[in-house]
Amino acid sequence: MKRASGAMFGLAYGDSLGAPTEFLSMKQIRRRFGDHGPARPDGDPALVTDDTQMAIAVGLAILDALANPPFTPDLITPMWRRRFVDWLDSPDNDRAPGNTCLRACRGLAAGKPWVEATVTGSKGCGANMRVAPVGLAPGLSDETRAGASQLQAALTHGHPTGLAASELTAFAVRLLADGTDPSDLPGSLRARCHDQRTTYHERWLGDLWRRPGVDAAETFIARGWDECLAVLDRLDEAVARGDRTSDPCGATGAGWVAEEALATGLLCFLLFPDDPVGAIRRGAASSGDSDSIACLAGAFAGAHLGMDAWPREWSARIEYAGDLARIGEAWD
Image (cartoon, rainbow, N blue to C red):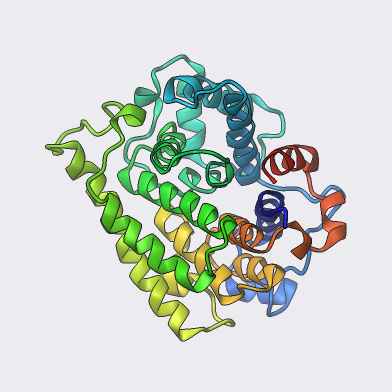
């Protein structure tokens, strides 16, 4: 089914579809694109945003790391640092990137230890918009996948909810790629929240937890899992309502922060589990961080349905098709 390719291209398709609607109201989106939002990626190439650019950076670094086992934090951290700094300096880094990513990557470029470069109070969706490749990478243990998911987030976003939401996003992709039924996905993610609530991956995160007012690593990370559990409650309610026509941000949040990006991206996918184009159109036709929401919805849909579920002609036009194919084909 080529699920890895489906997820990588899917996230780019969603990103491209949501880019022109990101800062528009629902009224403006409907006036410009109709009730269902943009129908297809526009342009040749169809441009993406920093969401796809950084997902590719995460994925290419993992490819390099997996070619030089074992996969450890000491191996992957400098690889991600280099890829993130390359992204920062790229002339194509002109797609309205988030301030947190820019600020943290400037610190990485200056040679700061990542625990000093990261923006400790930020849980923006930049933490998990790029994490899908960690979910797709083959052969990782659950502990390694969890630690790596959180580390790639922590390089820029040091808030515990960004870490937990990134882990959940990666595991959602992995579960779908392994054949989990979409209807079972929210329950599996909720169970992971409870199981991991006090698990702090010190080997991957070091002393990130140490800050004023925090008495233990377990206290630090539990806050992130609790905020994710709260948004999963909202997701369950929205899925039960099954409303395919309303702005999804009204149910699970605008997606500017990591846990809401996860939940709203999941909502768009779960409302259209067998219609990947419908899922990303729903994400793009939203009042919040439309490109990130649709990007995540596309990753989930592609991991579930595979590459052949997407319109065939889109793959020749999407920006960075070569990098997307390289990552996807390596893991299909």
